[in-house]
Length: 159
Image (cartoon, rainbow, N blue to C red; front, side):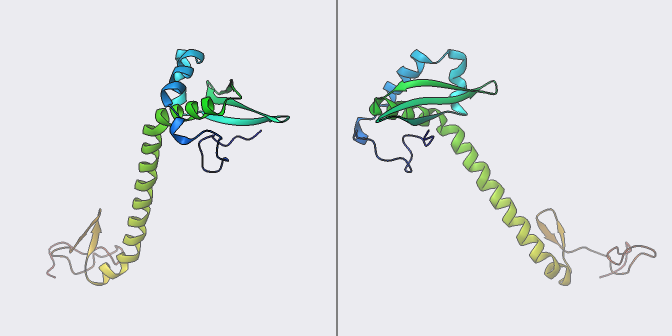
């Protein structure tokens, strides 16, 4: 069983031209054959897979609902399978965009943390401390407090 989405670049090109793919046909097929309570699940999961049966190819819509995989037969029509895949891509686009944004935010935060870790010793040597994402120079503290760590300075002492 080949589980690559029909519309993915990894899948071989379908015999139908790309301009004949109509997501409206795929949406109509989905509305006709998928129960209404399962249509919302297609926004999170769902793929059109290609299977070989002897010399023929069969296409199936696979998705998960309530922890179980459900497969619906699309048939051997590659154009219909491409239309269903396009309709799925349209339904999943907002979620995929959200997930891509989350990944970018995570990467940015990771880079910021690494940068601050790298800068912290240099800032401390220059007399600055990190306060959140801001480098601040502490005011009025220059002598260590007795019994405290060397980083703790007594209040009221001049710089």
